[in-house]
Image 1 (cartoon, rainbow, N blue to C red):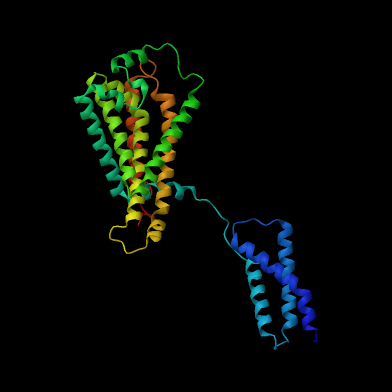
Image 2 (cartoon, rainbow, N blue to C red):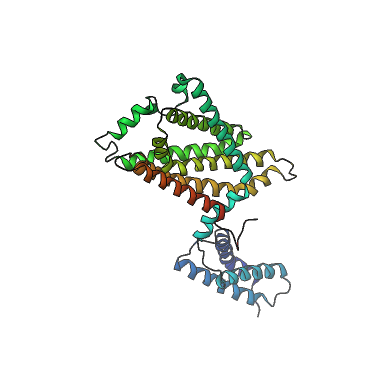
Length: 331
């Protein structure tokens, strides 16, 4: 078969270029779903280029053009006859990535916990030595009154002060606590010093509140008020601190011969899993604080609230300590 090769190339090149562009789009976005018209066009271009390749078989003087078409047809064949499994989100693996990442970095969590406890001890000591420091140490204005006065007011309340506003109050708590957690993580970019300050200051406030209420004889009220949401909220903030120290460790790179970019890539997945897990916990804590923690005796017995908070804490510890172990244990 004899053909006018220059004319043949001019006529058919527009189809080759179109097929190459279409294949590039498919390869760049493998998860994209093509419409039926796009699939039909891909098949037409594949058949046309295959026919062009067959017509060129007799032209041994054009090996480069033939090699180009062979590559193009081969790529199109692979896309058309591909047996790729459908993309499925494995929610179980996404959820279990959180406790696995937590266990891989227990040292960072221990540091986060230790700094918070140090802050608690400092806040406790300062309040005990100087009760007038209450105005500086207390995180909320409603804590400025004496514990006995606040407890009497809460227990004798005849109206629901959150009636019609629970969802708004809960959303505000969630956004504020998630902001603090993300701040604790992001502050790791300051070589960990910012994370240390966030955790220590939170610990100081917590220790000051605990000393004030226990010294005032209101320890039961304090436990019933804090445990339902605090058993989740406080560990979530500690997890933010853990993420911050992981980030600081990757930035500093103690004893590592890897580049900084490589160290960041290695911990990126764990950072996301931990912060996303902490954010999920804080959503639950916000709901509990609005619908449970803010209601006191006689509306909800203190023993019931304390028991509920203790069960939450045990469940969280079990999840972080054992979930995801076994066949896919962390490495």
